[in-house]
Image (cartoon, rainbow, N blue to C red; front, side, top):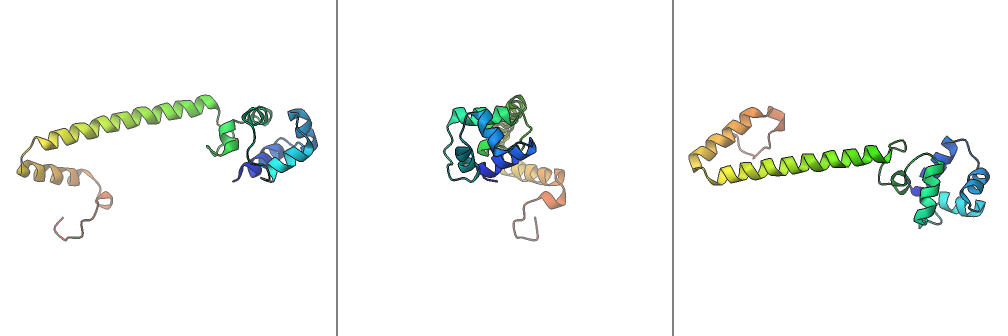
Length: 133
């Protein structure tokens, strides 16, 4: 959905006309029309913030960084923080596994690979193209 389509959706969701919305936002009706039709796509950030506040959404939704107009900034930040922590934990675990693998002999590596394969469901395994996986 384009920025303009999002603006139309938000305005209509509030049941406002272009005239009402433009007046409240301190814009001309023609300018709001151009924003909604994607004729002007470089909307100043202060205007995006006013529009977001008026339409009860975030600037992240208007510019297309998120797809849920009802998600608030605190929720977005919490999710981003949770993803960052999960990535850090995954990266640390991956680094530990690689470090351990570097310190074992080839026979132990074969046993380790076999163990990993038994821990995953059949459909999740990557296929090497051979029958003796």
